[in-house]
Length: 361
Image 1 (cartoon, one colour):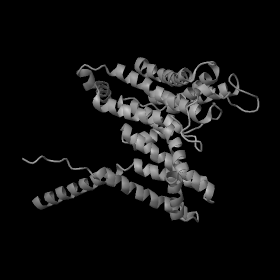
Image 2 (cartoon, rainbow, N blue to C red):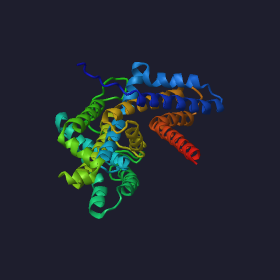
Image 3 (cartoon, one colour):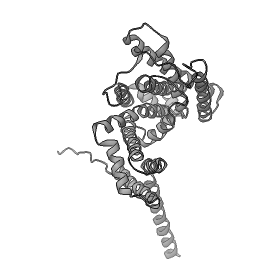
Image 4 (cartoon, rainbow, N blue to C red):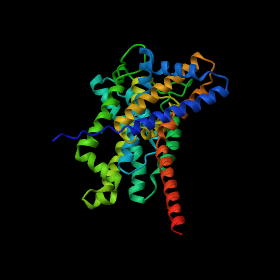
């Protein structure tokens, strides 16, 4: 008896490619209306993101924090919580890593670097603890509290960089972290560092946990149906609470890697948008850690390519960012094809039913 091979489902891939083509066409219309050659811009954007060792390394550096933040968002989604405070947790993790990096002196690198990373993760988890307690103890919606937490974290870290942790009166920045607390660079001509390996390891680890372990099964069960999970003996509150803290720790790790591996200090204003982009990339990755990893690499390359277009042409940065946003939007919204297909089937069904009723009458 011949074994049946499971056929590969091409529909998601085709929908994704169709979404990309539509996005490129719409972006091209924007550029034509602005008097620019869209083909030339797209070629430059692709080369700037994915061609040449220097461009590839810079794209990987931009993708590294996005891998962490998208995983942080996915952990929350998998446990039935919506952590919209990744941006604020990242800022707290960044300033905590900077503080640990220049405060603890005389430590060997094998102690100082892990200590700084753990400090960043602890700061992110503690900032996520507040909305977690409010949600599970006071029944306060976590979407509201985490969004509000972003603003509080922005102003609080700005205060720290401007006053108690300020290195000199000329700029709002902390002292540089010591060399024993820095993540080594992979190459001399780029800021990409060992944080990339940590990010990839985290993505693979959570993929394995979700697919192969009881821990991941409990998280998936709580996220899919908390009532059924409770029925089979899983404590949904405990799992979701732990997922919220784990999500905050990953967001704090993203900020720590940015400080310890790229900038070597915290400054105000810090790199913005990493947390919010993580939400988008988590959605683009279709809820999978591996999908989030690939989506973050793609988005990092597109960001670096957009910067290359801005540096080498007279195309405004705002226009290239708009094109990038359109591309990502349509790729994330490729489920619209299923929606329109369902509407078409429903329309045909209604017409058939109406025809049958008319004939019988």
